[in-house]
Length: 109
Image (tube, rainbow, N blue to C red; front, side):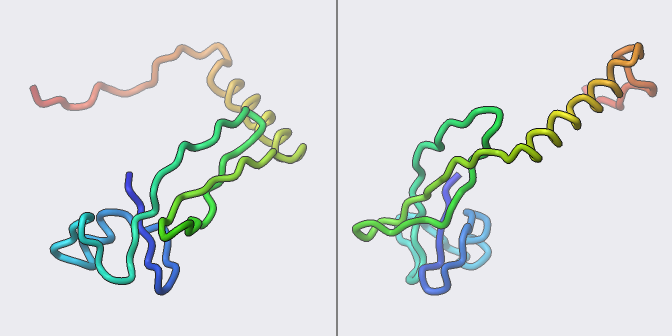
């Protein structure tokens, strides 16, 4: 999904819906003064003990580009995630059937 930046106030991220609310005739091909597209880049890969965080876009040669950083989880964060997973597995695999009580939702065909 495209993102935009207000280059006067550094408001970021702005999405297409935000731009249409601000500018009734918003057209990405003719960006309003003070706004720019934050161009996409490939999001870096991460492992199950890392998170990817988006940083503020960087301006290079007149082009705003999104940027990301990979952050290693701390030992405490990993332990918390592992404990949470253990609790979830216990809750849903304690000999109960995989079906939930209740009836099927109404479906219009």
